[in-house]
Amino acid sequence: MSMLLLASAGHSPGVTGLGVALAITWPEPVLLVDANREPDQTVLAGHLQGVDPGGRGLGGLLQAHRERRSLAESLPAMTVSLRAEEGHDFVPGFSHPGMVDLFAPVWPELATTLEAAGRTVIVDAGRITPAGLPPALVAACSGLAVVTGSRLVDLAALRLYLPLVVAAAGAERVGLVVVGPGRPYGSGEIGHRFGVDVWAKLAWQPAEAAVFAAGAVAPRRLMAGDYVEDVRTLGEALAARAAGRRLHLGTPRPGSGGT
Image (cartoon, rainbow, N blue to C red; front, side, top):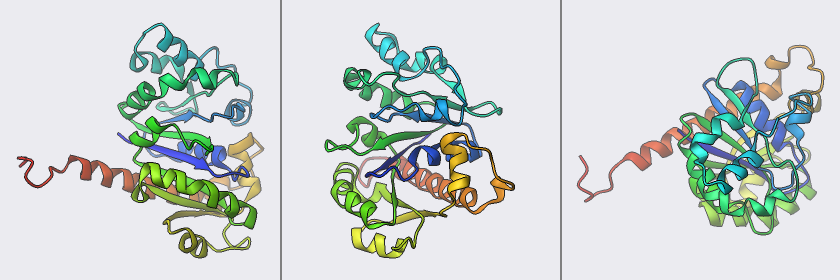
């Protein structure tokens, strides 16, 4: 299947809420992974209303790695249910900031495990750091969506960090998701300025976004609102890109002897 990365360049423009919304609305089995290296437990405290992970998550996978147990075999026991329907699950993130540095040698095996998970994997990678994103996740992903607002402060941060992920992933695998286009800059302006395709626009709907980001009470007709509609459109675009990449990677190169 495919692994999709979500990240931001700063100012918290709604990456976690978008990840939850994408996973909730994904039409097929999906796994959402909290790989934010600035741990905040937002999904557990927000959308999942304070559920106790009981040792499940990246901390449990770190322990498995230390004990030389297979992450692929350990992964199913490290998830919590994200919604009632079977197959929509969540891997909680770091339960302590000190785990982040300890996890450094685990990223390559985790990336391989997620890539072979048998369902779409959406990774909330949090903010891009000065060192970029975990290279193993970037190498394995089908697409990397950088979420940004349209204010000057958002775009100033984007200017600093976007080149890091474009250099690491290649421009063809990186796209922008603009939250609140026209506040004040339009998505077309932003895409042109940075030379990166805009994969989607998200309507500025704080009340709707807060349902997924913080577990807020859902407004009426949430699932028919502009925010969710935009999330579904992004999901379709990401799925199409992932399918296209799988097709490209499965096509023999000229002279390779394939049929």
